[in-house]
Image (cartoon, rainbow, N blue to C red; front, side, top):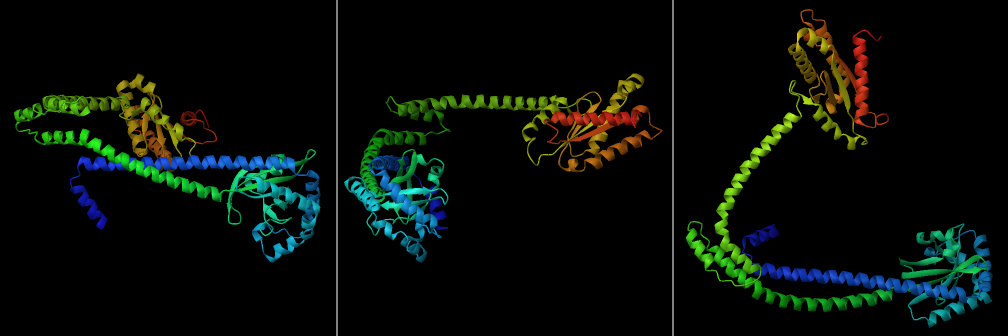
Length: 497
């Protein structure tokens, strides 16, 4: 409630343009600072990621060529035999649990082997001479049967290193290694509670044409991220100071070149008096703003404004009257173009326009419709024997029967003696009942011996329902309804049993 009251007071208070301009300049400046910050941070993050991804990849590529392959093969054979024979395989996420400790204890003798110690020394020397924030360098192999990674040797300090046989899950990003071992682990990022924010790359170690293991490099991105945050904050402080200074200078210039002249224009505008045009003209004529810019143009426009305004109003009034008349004529012509002049129902043009709208909806699950075809029998005979007036009367009478029966559906006269009804919603659901009612009305008229031939309104009806399995278009439904109507016509004439 308090916020609404404050907002209402702010709306009622006068808010001068210099204040709005000041706010706009400062907001725009802050937005630019924000955009610059986001862009700088994004560029710096992308650059750091590329740098350390390349670093991890280069170090792992180099080490894959430096390590002794025979030692890797020997060490893998020792570790793999224990892993394959172990009844349990607890992952590193269970580090320190009794089950994990019992599992790792099986590999205690491997840390005393010459292969293990030689490879660990190579990895530790590589880690110590590298200038990047390398967390660890390690050699592992991928077990495709269990889809996990098995550590062979780790360069980290003994209390932090993953021991031989330690199992890590195979990340989704590296699952292609199962079918393409030579691919290795292209550089990727992980952020886990166990290892922190890392970029990891792994390169295949070959023995002949066979990939025996991967040498992997973990580069810590935590320190990089801290350095990046510090750089971004320094850049932000510099931008803020620069932006505020720029905004202050901009506002001073804006005040001299825009705000002050605009205030003069505003004062003159307030003196505009419709009750005394002569005085108003004198006020604008006395306006002394000599500038070759938009403000000068505005001043000249204001002088011309009063002279043009009455002429424009007259022109607009005339144009609006002409436009209203044109719109009414267009509406009238549109109605006539879609209406059958004899029966008053819609015509073939209206039918074509309406079914065209059905095309994009034909494949919707809940789109249902049916088409009724009705044909007045013996229209030519009526015209020949009783005259065209009688034929027209018969058509009008049939139209009334159709419209009364299918009261909720559009009715179209699509030919001389042919009518179409499109059934949807209520009439669609009651189609069988409505068709039966129509036939009952026709039969009732046929049985009335006091009626003449034209008055009996002998008509045949056919009906088809849209079926997505059969119908590719509305025309297919129309054709089936037309065929059903002709079957009914033949039955009525006794040609078909």
